Image (cartoon, rainbow, N blue to C red):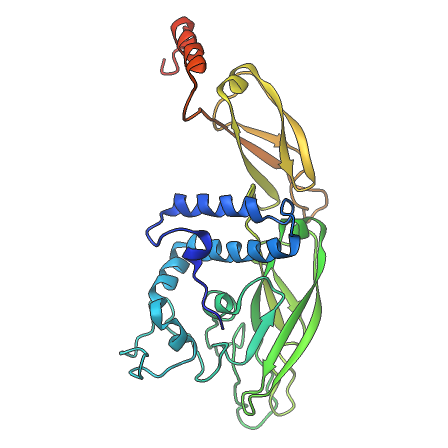
Length: 336
């Protein structure tokens, strides 16, 4: 399992604040988004890596866990006993990981299951995704073998992994190839199986895609558990998602806001023209009906363009004269 330096991936320091993390993500996401990059395969892999880094560092709880793993991340993932050379000096794991089981000698760190094609790395799955699962008597979303009790048939546990779904896939639906490698807990032998997973149009953040019978094997003739893929919508450089609606931050020039304008903005299906009414102020939302994600009841949600009146950081000498003339002649007082 390869360690992921999420700070290096986003090109930021460990002291970066929330705004700095967001700006770094957007800058890189716009550069590597498969829709604009020339080498789409390489860009897609890089874009997913950027998404993964932002998924962790933009979430205060995940970021704290990540920072606390520190140089001992590998020993922790492999279950090095407390006090071992290079391992932990106490019986207390990093904060936030209490109760998680990581098995000695298991390179994946989570009981013999390994995924590919989900859009997330093994490192993410181990510590921050479905892979970092708690033991549970309820048998839901857990990892690792369990023994049959009383010698009777016992159903295998369900297992869970995360799957990164693009907004385009959420809009149109798709079919993905996901590979699951199972490692026998006794022999250590690995077996790979590839499945076609249908991503339904209109899928939501947090939705579970169930693959019956693909979980842990049952004991003493019991049925196998199920595999659940936990949907995480890919972060987009232009849009944020709320239910079936999309939100887009729309910067406009002061003269566009004051006089009105017709401009084009991106949607999931290409650019469209939108009218900026004269007198539009920051914070106003302009709605484009039916440009969001599919609704459960049919149809689609909306795209909301949230207006921000932007000003230039620097102005040329001629521009300054025009601004000064406007200042001298205007009777408008924004604080009145």
